[in-house]
Length: 142
Image 1 (tube, helix red, strand yellow):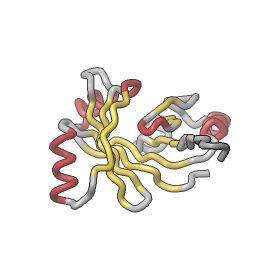
Image 2: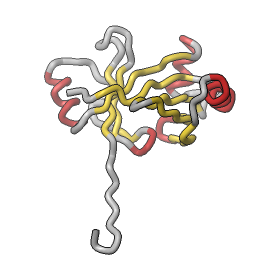
Image 3: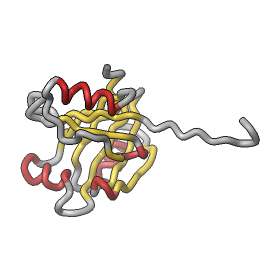
Image 4: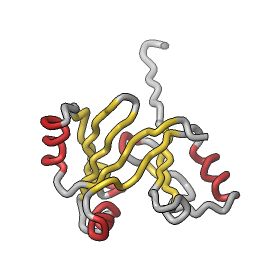
């Protein structure tokens, strides 16, 4: 079951210009910039309530974001939904014959497990499932 909207991914040509706009014009604070080499993207992250806005700048011409922008230009790329046990969700969707881009999770921004559903299966909306990885540290026997 989907828990909530986790984030909205927005494809951008120039991350620095977009960060300036979101900060100066919309009054949001950038909480960080992350390179995600596996996805060939640089991500600027803003938080708005419980939802993240991820500005996605391609780092190579063959990245999925660069290809997206060749066809559609800048704009909303996908909606990410928070889930628990992403593997179980993917298995359940496969059993229901839902077309997937990822049948097994991969690592996305923040080190979270992610997987995409094919937009042809979701009426044109690229949909991402996102399971947050919780890192537990042990200090002095805690």
